[in-house]
Image 1: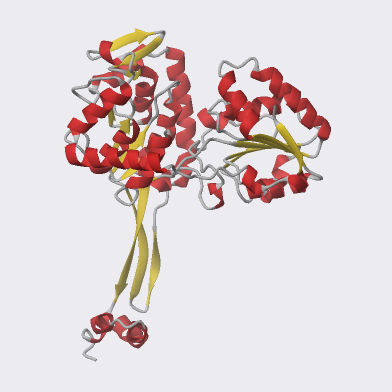
Image 2 (image 1 turned 120 degrees about the vertical axis):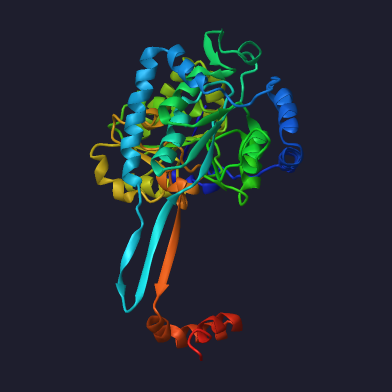
Length: 442
């Protein structure tokens, strides 16, 4: 079951997930990217058949697919997504930056403008579950930023594609539109995406980065994916921008004896069901709570549909740390730098200034992490594997770029000329100095 240690036994390396890519994975992804660059849609068609089991003639969903999705997804869930979208929009509108102009002084004008990225690709995973929340969390900030064209890439369903070429089908209770889960397409409509393409995996990232006959090249790619998607994003970075290289989702809970062990265990398992590599950590100064949480984890695991996945995560990557004090718990948390941090304490805002490294913080005993996964408003695309030491959640700013501007009058240039020329000469760049002196006949 879950491992329990004392704070003094803690070693950082036992928690931090190191992002090490295998040589085989690296070379496989490189070959896929090279093939997409060389052969475009022909290569894309082969990979879609090989990896997704689908033969597609047209990768882009027709515009009518979004309207069909709205009509074929449960009405109540549509309303839920719309309410979540409003919360996400309300939160992210506060992130908008408008640039600045420094008041002119001595013939000098300086400032900065903020402009949206022109075209963005959002990758939405397929697999064992749909991710309409990923659509909302990536598309809405891009829309607020003013991105001209937002493109979604998501893998087609092996089961649905053969039956959905002309519209709607239902396989095992899942409604698909042209081979894509209708909930994902409905979320795209609600969030404001412009186009949806049924492509997945590393080949989708390559197509977005370099363009094919069917898929336009984008300027930035965001969104999560499996190891192949993450490696593809790593390899195309520099050709296009990316949001981050995401590792396994993780959660850290700080709690004392007043916490409800049933709630703490449920919160830890909420991340474990993401995948077998997802760390779930409890730091507490109460040995009694620790023992109760251990028992609750075992009890609740047996009730989960994804028990096998969650159990492996708890057994391989779960940890309970017994600290001497709550202050020590925060010290350890800042070393671990969790993606999700829950402060399950009375008066949680008293402790907020102790948080130095965390992707997103959940305050108090009635704020479980899934609130922000789906609904509350803050973005759920967060730095993982300790990378919140130097980065933060996906935001409107990720979909904009900054440009500075400089204006000098001749008199202002004259006043600065000797300093600039001296700097250029010290660094050995004569032509730099000449741009100044030739304007001033020096």
